[in-house]
Length: 360
Image (cartoon, rainbow, N blue to C red; front, side, top):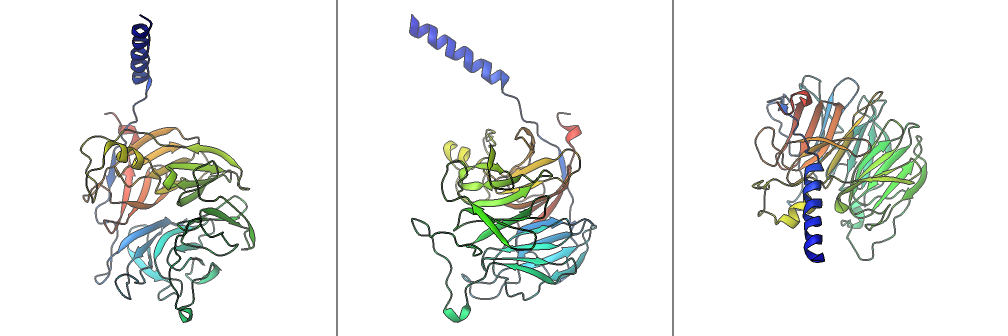
């Protein structure tokens, strides 16, 4: 009798939770067709980064301009477009740091920062396009350089040396935070003048540890958000690296979502991939700020409040407009204007969101 009563209670609890579980709204949106006006002889490669400055100019970091052998090519090209999508210029042509593009950001002074995973370097350009600050150093060609290898246990991280860094952001004081990355698993902090301050994090899945810190952003209060992709979470820290909270995105994957490549994942594998943050961005202040995050499968963009409440989502995996092939970086100059840089579709989509139309 007790077993029957317990089963009834469990069924009632499950039904209650099912009713209480809020439905995440789908945000209607448009993708501007042919927004970027490319020169006749230029194409994007895998687009790993996108950023927007105060004038609305868009910077696209593409794995194009390829030279070298198939499996050791130099693939990085930084292009600038006007707010109307017209091509303006290439920045840093033949730069010594160009090896394998990963992310691009623009700071509050309109300096342009390029993060190159292949050369282990982070380069700051002035708004005019000249190098003004350098972080990290690639291996010397004269020493028969070879890529960093993954060993277990990992090699200790070295102050000022990066191993496949991924992204950069800044707090309210102009301090610099670099996510580092695929080999190291940490956040490196410099002051605004480029002087080393500290690091935090190591490889693992505990609070304050990372498994591929892939993207990083800061809010108007100076809190640092780290897309801990391999651990399927976003960790939030204060500017001194003190843990504040963790954000996870848990939304069921609809049936029939076909991955851009590969076999259909099992339900368990789909759940592991869904919500894993590949790219994050935070809308600028003043006023209410929003956090956007993207995953690779099922290929969605998620809108959240800064405390982690899921407010809506959009998109799916695919090759057509309004579909995505591995969004690698997001830029969100306003709440309802996003730029999505896609690796697999070799493009950037300019998205206009219409949250007021949700549910209509």
